[in-house]
Image (cartoon, rainbow, N blue to C red):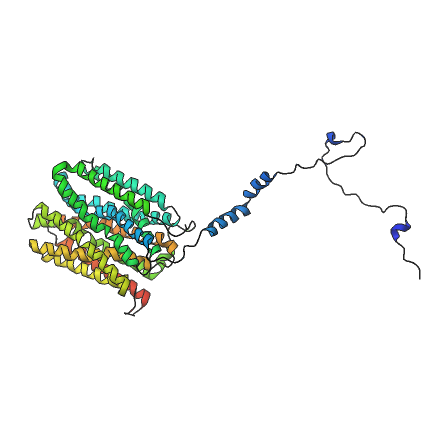
Length: 476
């Protein structure tokens, strides 16, 4: 058997190789002096800092860093539904609503004073208060979305500054247009940046006790609605309009600082997502709820604005009785906000109470047409104050029950607030125009407000029906 030979060893000539042509830039300074050997200039070795800078700016690493930051945020878990921090949020929200809704619910006193001193029609004066409520609700879509995105603190700070600026500027006003800008627009913008973000925090801390927590917060409108008119009634004859309003502003400044120190968002921010969740309006319960609350708020505030004027102009009661009527309507609101909230949490659910409270409020406004003496108007103020307070307290907790994703609470709550804002903008001026058209008679305004409340309650019934069907014994 012939031995196996290596072909390379049989030939002394090296194998022919085809050279690879590589374009090389010749640097003549790199030629060796001893031989004609060309060296390719080697690229400088990048330092570790250069590598780190380049890696930070690559799209992949930017995306991974963003995801890492988002995923590194601790999940807060389910709402604590109690405890010191959770109940602290409820009481701090009480202070915020004390400064927003409490001030708004005191507008009946301003309405009487402005009508007497500025010599404008009641419907003109009511536009100041209506614009204030409109902006409080309308700004909710934007301030609520910013809260979801993690900007609660900046929004709250700006809102506090704008609100207080509006109140201090109101103290300098002597003409209608000045009051419209200061008390209506400036204060209204500040209120809008405060109200929705603060209220949107409550459902993130509570589940079973949610209605009670929101009731505690909402009752701030009752305490403010008692304290601010009392301050006006005591100080206005003694120190004048300007310093009376400044005293109110300093009270608001003090309470606002306390609220700012303790209010704290619980959920991590939701940076992505649209400004408006249009898909929510395709949900029949949510859409019908928005329409129902629009109608309820359309008829809710004329009684607060005009019961004082009714007592003075129709019944001939003194100015002090007009202020006491407003104090009573706001005072009984403490009970009207807390008791329904308690029963809603423990037994019925919020919407099951909200519907009868809407019907009862409309019926009570209809009964206002039969009031002809002092005892009757004070009875009306007490009963209406109770039922109207229940509507104001139960509607935010009902709205939160229609939202399953707590990270969308701010924007979905703000959307309904924006819908309601147009009802608040037009409701009281429509009632005032009806009074003026009837030459001082209130029956048209009373019929309008009562009908709007009853129609709103019936629409809320349709919202419940679309959610639960014809099942009566469903807690919702």
